[in-house]
Image (cartoon, rainbow over all chains, first blue to last red; front, side, top):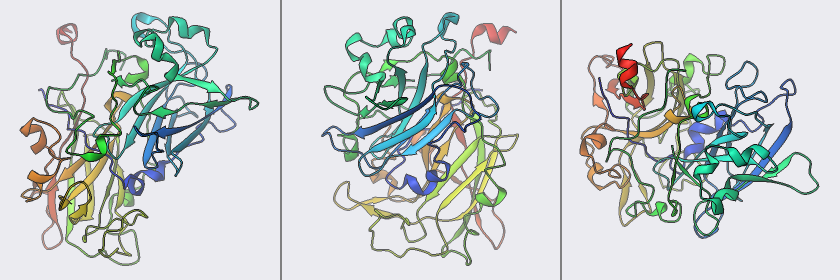
Length: 179
Length: 236
């Protein structure tokens, strides 16, 4: 039997009515082990204006590189505010298997939904100062001069705080994947 | 799951491009640089699991969330969640949201001059059962104007959000109603060239799920991406 996947449609401007009940900005209660991080950023459109009606979802492994373990679902959902801002408080994921059983560098998968997107944008968050980035099988597919758009930047003077933005268009456009 | 090497890529013409100028909001929001083809790794082959501790049976009845009954034509929207290989997708989260019977959302940015309904929020959720079935009770949403172009009106629709078993199976879509005269003019509905794909976004009137004297039934089947089936797997 062969069917075709249902056509994607935009979340539209009223997504909050159906989707905010599951807002999850704190992914890791105190019982979860691992290095505490916070990721904050903004979604900006082609004019550099903040996108105040986006939904950012993340999916990540635990500190040992395991997905969907008891006590840590690994799913986050944040709706952008009037400044286009979103935020997650979580733990840094461990390394997980990649193609040909090679380990991937620590990363977080991201889906972005908004009015004006007929289907979600898929991207990833990687970490600065991570030696494994150099051999990561997915990062290596990204043109070298654009890889920085996938790497969260440490915020000076705030331990564990990272900044990572979603730039929809332009010179610093975030790398998006055909998933 | 460990047998899955990846999910199928879309059949040509059945999924929208990001840039679609007839839908004006895509112009400043669609990526302009080429997408990077992502191999499906363990990250894309796994996904979050939701349970009955957070989704209760009453969450699927949008007509019983307030003290009184909402105004409008009561409907039952049900169907199955399947993958592209025809296999049911069990225990997956289905979220819906919609306008009220007058075409109005209780949302701060909705300024459409139509009444809100104190007995209708328009938000529901459920988990598909072990056979992939889902069912909502609601009221038929109204059409409403939007500012995309002169005299732009959205056809009646219900927004759907689904997870499926993996990050790669996440789907947000909209369900439309049969015979809606606005469909040929709606840039969202018409965002893909494949006419059959568009028509699969339209629910079917369904006598089997219609409850006599209570509510008309509409059937809407949702197909999530299915795993690639390799010749090796077929031989096993």
